[in-house]
Every structure is written in C-alpha cells, then in structure tokens.
Length: 195
Image 1 (cartoon, helix red, strand yellow):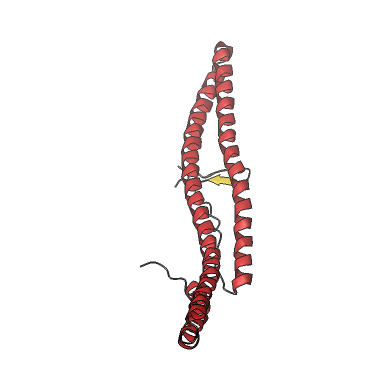
Image 2 (tube, helix red, strand yellow):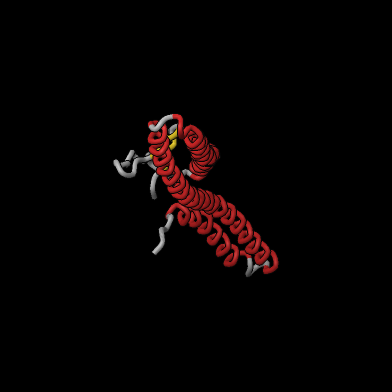
C-alpha cells in the first residue's frame, strides 16, 4: 500500500469540518424559514470550502510532482552516467593498448616513426573524446544543482505556509569503490561509476 501523507489529510479536515458544520447549521436553521436564501448560503459555503481545499491540495501535490520530476530526471542521469562510464572505460582500454603498441614501436627506432605519429594522433583523439563525454556530464550537473536549489526553496516555502515538514535529502556522495581491474574514473571532480 502507498504512503499516506497525514499532514495533507489534516489540512483537508481543517478546511472541510468547519464548512460541513456551517452547511449543516444553515440547512437546519435558515432553510426552514427562508428556503431560497438557505440553499444559496449552503451552496456558497460549499463552493468556498471547495475553493480553499483545492488550493491547499494543489500546493501539496505541486511539491510532490516537483520531487517526482526530480527523481525521474536523476534516474535518466544515472542511466546516462552508466553509458558514459562504459564508453570512457572502453576508450581507456583502447588508449592503454595503443600506448603499449606505441612504446613497442618507439623501441624499434626510426623505422616506425610514421606509425608512432599515427598512434599519438589516435591517442590524443580518444583522449579528447573522453573529455567531451565528461564535459556533457558537467553541463548536466550544473543544471541539476539549479533544480535542486529550486526544489529546496519550494519545500521551504511550502513548510512556512502550511506549518508541515517535508523531508528532502539529496543523494549521498558515493565513495570511491574502484578496484584494480575496474578503477573509477574521475575528471575535474566528477566520477563515472559503473551502474
């Protein structure tokens, strides 16, 4: 069964109970003496209660919608990070192999100078590709920080307006879990992890 937010139910009850009491009192005392006025007052009280209840629920569910969007965005980001990690690791393995070949050919002398220069060019191209993959990640992380701060502001505003507390915890930092055969790659403070 899903999570029930009791603060929303409490807020709805705080609005609905007085409205229902007012409607019952109008129905009991005003409608018998002046039916048209009593029915009009009862409808007016009901509409007023519905308006305030709708406004309160929109605030509460607006916060939940923002959090759901943020969680969905984080899931997509983690999937992209996994793909980036795989691409960077594959590229790193190729770079390591090219480095080994380059060292072997350099030992053999000037005979393989053309091949060595081609290997150097390939290594630099692959290194640039790794940097580009990581820069795309950095741009996304900057936009993510902006969204996190806007979500925190929204939650703080909701808490001050309603007097309820909403817990939002940013994702914890992930420790370096790299091993010898699969090290974590960290560039400019961003770490790619295998998911």
